[in-house]
Image (tube, rainbow, N blue to C red; front, side, top):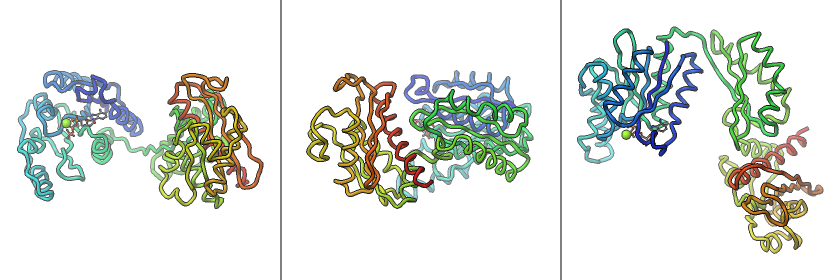
Length: 416
Ligand code: ATP
Ligand code: MG
């Protein structure tokens, strides 16, 4: 089965929104073992949607359309599908009842327009969204045993319907019986080419053995991801293959790996602090609160994160944190900020960060120079110096994750 994607929406063409739906769908199709050779984007224009769908349906077995299923006049995907399939639109009583019930429950009058969402091309099956009242997805059989799927443009609704209804239907059509699972190891501290070099022998070996594949995904401030994909006859086997390969890679990559799948750097740091029974206080200058913001993304972090001093002006570093007067982009300042944060915030661990985000240099230090200071308990403070690339935004983001990574590595060392 060859599948194509058609994303509908004028905003996509104008660059007002990025077509993340097609990217996600492409990834899911690949994981499901379904070939997807083309993706198109088309505006909210009936004749052009019809033309795009015709073209896609001519050369492929399945077409997945996303967007344009809503209640407004510019949502015309339904009409376009009906035109291409040469059928009319019928009111689906079931869908209509769900929409009416949703409005009744909220005590609101239903605009007649909303009933448009209950119109489905004759012969199509509606796939309900679990939240009643929103546009259903559609499975529309097409001549030649082909099929057109339509899913809403809103990303979480799209993902839910694709996962629950579209992918299983496609797999059934394709006769795919293998299970494909993947797992992502997140790393920090090595470049993409460096990682590729480290793992090259194993990747070559896996090419020969089959079963598991390894791919790299550069994800900026989220680290470099190493994705393992396993294909097997059943789920238990695929899981075991992933676990086995993960163990092997962890043994090789050591502390470069900070998390799996959705585990962020801040999640790893919070878990380590908790494991050691340590609390953290921050002194942020160049990052202006970015570290605090990342840490407070972690649910339950209040058990270990005391707080932060955003000591942006030098005077605040001197007066609040007790940093010695002088140039403030130095290793000593970062260490004194860490010590000051630990004291002022009554924490076990202090982390301080100072640097130059640009655009102009400061204290004779070039843009991208960042010092991170760390003190754990009564130990001697330490610091590292970073030379980070990019503009202001990138320097600050990279500084934040690098500082968290320093703390993570020291806590790992304490774990022995
Ligand atoms: P609605 O019922 O909300 O109108 P819809 O199926 O008509 O849903 P659209 O109107 O096309 O979908 O898009 C709704 C919103 O979903 C857009 O404003 C946009 O935020 C998001 N969206 C649509 N298409 C995409 C896409 N391809 N990638 C990412 N986001 C998208
Ligand atoms: Mg819409």
